[in-house]
Image (tube, rainbow, N blue to C red):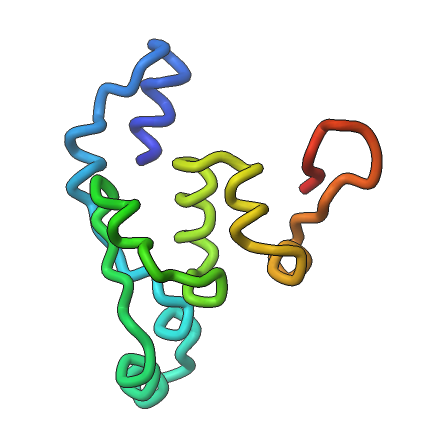
Length: 112
């Protein structure tokens, strides 16, 4: 993903989309936040794993709530969808939890 950002900044286009689209990871916050293998197993019984393949982001995110995603998943969602959409999806309580606040004046939208 960093190679894609780099190539976009250097050349004005992404040269690695085919590679990035095949990458996958588990975006379930309950699993990432598990303090031990025991807690990971317990969380995996209670929550969906949200195994996400980057090229199938939208279908993988169907039914996901802000509390389901950990910080990496939220950052990738922001890159794909833009800050206005991710902030709307997160809602005020999650914006505060993640350190993103709505601007109080002007039309700039967000302050991070």
